[in-house]
Image (cartoon, rainbow, N blue to C red):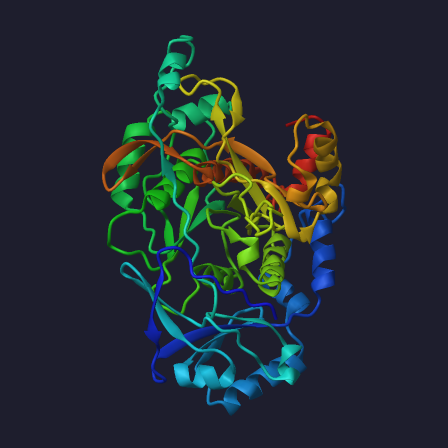
Length: 496
């Protein structure tokens, strides 16, 4: 397996871990039926298909993908032969989480050497060297998690206004505002005070990582300040995971406040995956939760990403299958496109390329980009937010559902970068965009202006999708599920 290892900025090595130090590793067992799963997702997500919306239960997904008896037996025998018995699985039987000392892990995975890495108050146990597994096991495992990947960090921005912005303020009296609030979003996207959730069985969620916490008091104050024009809830209904008592995180506050003010009065969950254990991968832990819970919110907003070239192909391909499993169950998974534009990978010798972001580049998620108001003080036309992530995957080929739209874009765009910078046959993203600039957020009881990033646009889109689901469920229709096939069909009809 390819096993890239890159120490992110700010992290430093603090020495080799002793043999008795405890670790938790995640074993991704090779699945069966992934081709059938892809065909099912295509049928269940295509409005033109007679199977559209007839989603599978978690148990039915398990029956499609669960590893074969040979895989389950081989992996279990291998672990037990090394004394590894403290393991737990998931409902779909395709992951095992096992706890063991460092000495056992290094014997189990020859080549691995676990070191401690630190950044501020955070600590991670990782191996800078690649691991191996016995040849007879390689066909039964996709990857082992908890060795190489560091928790990816994404920070929202707070941007000051420029002199040119203040000049634009004087240009017109219509719909003047001093930053994006729920009222501005509702005006721009033609939502009224009556556009709120009505059904108790509809729900939405956001996922938070790296000890990013929201505070219920911040949410209550935000709704008191900005939620006067529509019915709303001022409390999250369910937190899955550890909700810390430390300072609120700006990104966590942004996620919760805007999914709950856009998808107003809809039951909201927060998945809190802090990565408190130093060998845990918070994003992987969230994926395992999706494979282990039979009842989940229909919509999930996630502001998380890493560079494709910093991850192994085996890992990305397996995570992609996890998104297929979610799509088969009718879940809408939204990812922020990132805040680094197309990204840049500088190569010695001058063959520079753009740097796609994953999971934004997965063909089985809906990726949300960002826009700004043309005049930052008026509710007017939108233009691309210059930081908004976008590009073409170097791992996943372009899916059929977007081929026509992307082809038209490439043929009609007036200015394109050199073709050597990007893979024009790869999965293109984002799939849609919304306002991502100059938001008001309440965090640690302080209202903050000018917060920006696709971490803002993604929960807004999530709340809109949850509202559409609310209307559909009222009429006895299925939830929207995986959006992209329907989204691009609407675009072909000219309904942007």
